[in-house]
Picture 1 (tube, rainbow, N blue to C red):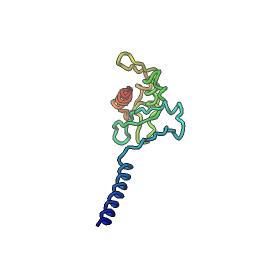
Picture 2: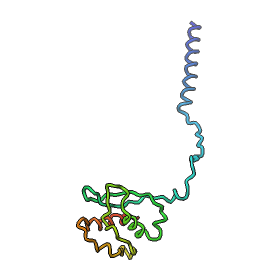
Picture 3: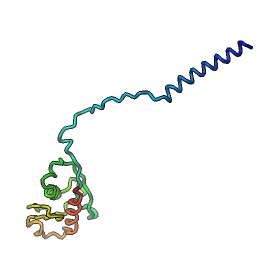
Picture 4: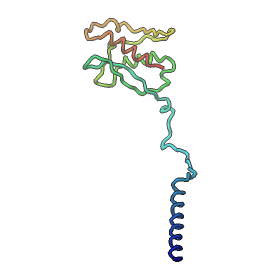
Length: 151
């Protein structure tokens, strides 16, 4: 009987040692070594200045205004963001599903912020267009939606 007891105690001790070893590795926090993150490529100054803006253009099919995102250099918005954005609107959309509501020959003379109002001075082509397809409300909304997205 002594031999049986010794064997049972030995098995229990061995199982306890195995359990302690397994639990110790699984439940006791190890010191984590955090390595410095090294990017795969360097980020250029131009990439650091990139920002996304939203311009609004008329949808060809349903005449509603749709947003078009553009990635630009944020430095272009420093001096006069209103002129820059209006000139992008005048250039027109990149998508073939959109069209510019602003008349094609229009040029921007100036755009400036006075208080909380943006004063926009267009060339005479802006009002001297005899085109029934021009949607005046969409012209206003293109400008309004685009310029009010500036934060």
